Length: 132
Picture 1 (tube, rainbow, N blue to C red):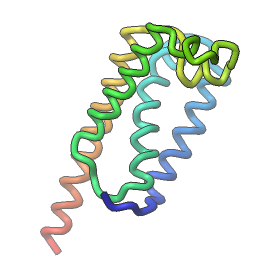
Picture 2: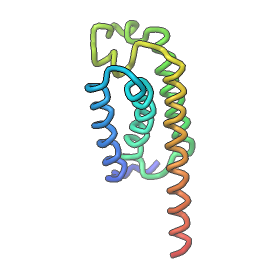
Picture 3: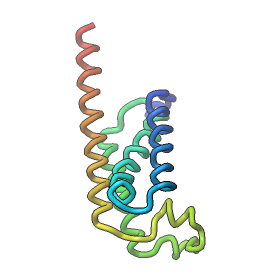
Picture 4: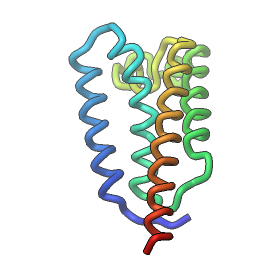
């Protein structure tokens, strides 16, 4: 694994951070808050990881999906309360307190988006290397 800072992924990470924060602060319900934010969060995690890791990790999108689904299932078991963080609004927002199958579906959609975007740009990168 090669560590190298990527300004491209860092910029995407910061943009997504601002968007996710705005969604959390300024929307109370609806599709944007309840579903679109879940799609963005897995893309956000992907961009954070790729900010520091130069080489592609095969199936990273799948690992991120597994992680997000795991966190969602831990909400079912009340992880925030097991950790004694039920009083913390930040912990309740970051870890979550409500299990929802739709969240898992949105995580999957976000990871599929990452997969297809990375696949598309990988093909373009390889084509440009071949043509040089």
